[in-house]
Length: 450
Ligand code: HEC
Ligand code: HEC
Image (cartoon, rainbow, N blue to C red; front, top):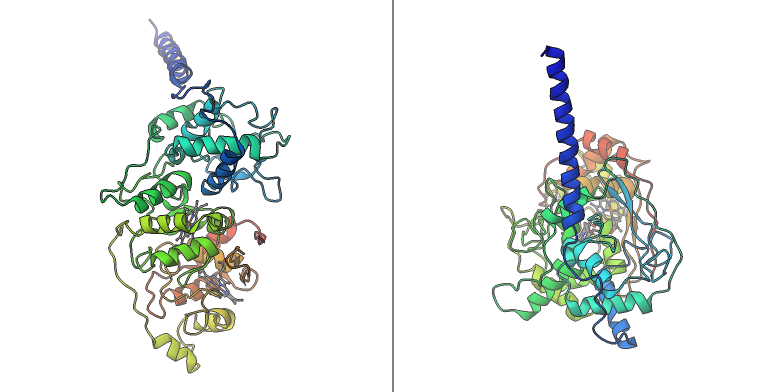
């Protein structure tokens, strides 16, 4: 056999192997992709008004309005773009419209989509839908949710938008492998060790319905959450979403909730503000669409559960340091960034860095200011922000955007200044970091009213 012939044979053998391998991997998802659940299951109880009403509350707890509602769009009609590293996916129409929504879903179809991430045609949903967390929703709550979406929501005729993901990444079947590897089986929340029913209720809400970890837990190599439950020490240890840092919610005094009381957490979830910080970025939407509508008992349960999570990293406590406040009071702006701070920031956040309670957040001892990654800080200084207006605190206060006013160097200087003043202690910010984030940000978002 000549060399040329041999090479040809090897190449054709490889091609055949490749095609057979591809088919086998693909066929496995068709044959075994079902993932449990029963498509034909019917709602096991009467679909009455009481169940619909309970479902409406569960929908708040599940933050269901946040994604399936596009800005300015009709509730639950879908179309909200959700950025992924490979392109945008759009949330689906989940109104009971029979053509374009979920009007033809049996209870079994609904269960499979919500808790298992599988469509009636056995396709796997993009994990932008948080089914790895929703796997913990109880049967009772799921039944109420189904009743609400079938009878409590207005059907709307609006076709789903196709994802903006290019081929071959747009093929859906590989997602089945993702689901097999990363999505847990449908299972109840594992109670914490110390037989505390309030914490267990909190765990159920945080891990399951509210899926707080989808933003607050760091993600691994497959973009999966590194831990879905408190049994993992990376659970709620801080994540990145839309160029904001979703803070560490564990017990660290410095970057987490160590210095917060349970009441602080309840107040923050109810009103979007606390003595420590004000809600911005994705958290504004969570407060506006979900947590402000929850009962005090449920918010207390969440707070009680969060306060049980031990710190994830080495810890130290904040002590206020008077030096910088005294210098600024005497007109000494020799420290780098001090002049920018006095000219642009101190009118609201004060030379003491203590702000005004419930109006302008304190920067001294603020976990957002002390976070290792400065993305949130750069983002909010460039684009500004508005504390959400809630039933508990209707006034919204805004911080203006500084993108047109301050150069990359000035933003870096003023942030390095607040990260090293009043007892704060976090690494300096570089102009290059500001330039990089500035290049990726969208135009400012519009404030919401109640
Ligand atoms: C007109 C008043 C005002 C000015 C001026 C102002 N801020 Fe703010 N700042 C606010 C308000 C209000 C918030 C809360 C915004 C939100 O929650 O979306 C805020 C939030 C912040 C936060 C996030 C803190 C948190 O926990 O929510 C940081 C950091 C911050 N400001 C830094 C600065 C810096 C640096 C400057 C100057 C370059 C500045 N601010 C100027 C009013 C102001
Ligand atoms: C869509 C993403 C997203 C979800 C879901 C989300 N958060 Fe947040 N959260 C953020 C971001 C971003 C921040 C940082 C901005 C801020 O402080 O408001 C934040 C901040 C917070 C803070 C303030 C922490 C600090 O140190 O400043 C608390 C408390 C909090 N979230 C609790 C929760 C709880 C409880 C849930 C579930 C009910 C939740 N979050 C769900 C994005 C999210």
